[in-house]
Image 1 (spheres, rainbow, N blue to C red):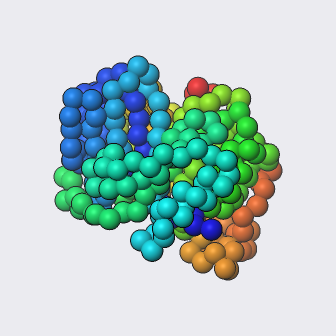
Image 2 (cartoon, rainbow, N blue to C red):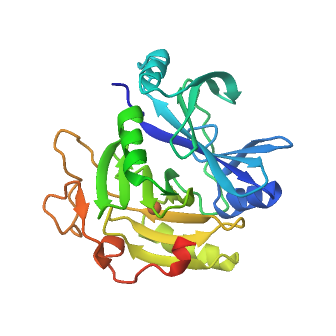
Length: 295
Ligand SMILES: [Fe+2]
């Protein structure tokens, strides 16, 4: 089976394109690489774009891009998807630097854009804003967590990293503990988008920078139990939640089957599991998420 290797980009619609471009470039510190009347492409490091913003009626995440390996066959991947009875579309030059992609919808309607990275861009080290390493993961409210988790595993080749009870799944497609997470709330929309920072010091600077720019935290800083990442959450100007994180668990060797050991782990070794619905799964440091996090 061909499985996707990493998250490449996320595409958002926004009623106020200029305001969201300003947030992503000036506050988050991504590089505005390309812009036209209806869309903007923002990059972090190697890729031409990690975030695409498009004019739309409401603020929402509409598409997610995933890369397969250079030696993988895109046609074979497409047949693999079709083998699950899923309708696919082949697009040429749909986005800059992506010559060919296979697109199809996941069960909740988010469009998957799967491609081989042929061209790298390469951004300079930005000197303003938070400047994350990369887009880390995208989390969604869903109505059928079991079915959609199965879709990501069976169709795209994700693995289950952890579950919180039976309602919150954390799925990996590479070494990072999660790239997609799905919480069963009966709704169908974005929960949050997460960007990776260097370390705790970077997170501290980011929190101060957010505060100076009028973006108060809504939860954190803390350390999640599941994934063990340091976290701090705020809302972007469209009201969508952004997480900044560091020190996320890594499964460096799938054959070993456990996450890289860390002193803050409770399990030795720390293997994928079902966590009880316990405060420590949410925040090892003890402060529980406010209701705001579920709005
Ligand atoms: Fe997260």
